[in-house]
Image (cartoon, rainbow, N blue to C red; front, side):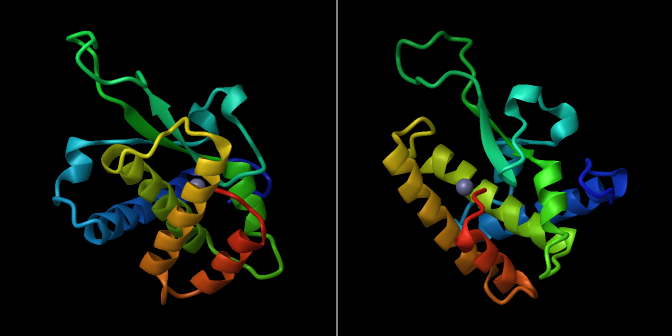
Length: 171
Ligand SMILES: [Zn+2]
C-alpha cells in the first residue's frame, strides 16, 4: 500500500477478493440466480483506468454506467443494455485507512463494494433511475446504505465504517 497514492498490485488483489465476497452477499440478499454476475458482468475500475474527469478524492467510489439510458421499442436492434461499472477512488480509500480508527483495506473494500453492487442491482432490477433528481438520489443513497448495513452487520470492524459513512463520507 502506498500512502496517498494509488492501489498497488497487492491492494488490487485484496479488493478483487472483497468484490467476490460482496457479489455473493448481494446475490444472497436479493435472492438472485448464482450466475447473475456472470450474465450481467460489471467492470471494477481504479484511477489507473479512469479518465481524469471521473477522478474524485471526496468519495470512495461511484457507480458508472455505459450505454444508452432509454430502452423500449424505438431502440436500435443492436442496442446493448446498460452496462455498469464501479470506479474505486484509490486515493480516498487509502487516505481513509490512515484515520485514527484504523481500518484495513479488506474491510473498507468489502464495505464500499457491497454498497456499490447494491446500487447496481437496484438500477438493473428495481428500475431506480440512474439520472434521477437530487432528492431521489439522496433517498436512494440512504436506502442503499441501510441495505448494506443490514448485509454487513456483525462483520468484524464494520461498525467503525458505518459511523464513518454516517458522519459524512459518501460513496
Ligand atoms: Zn452510494
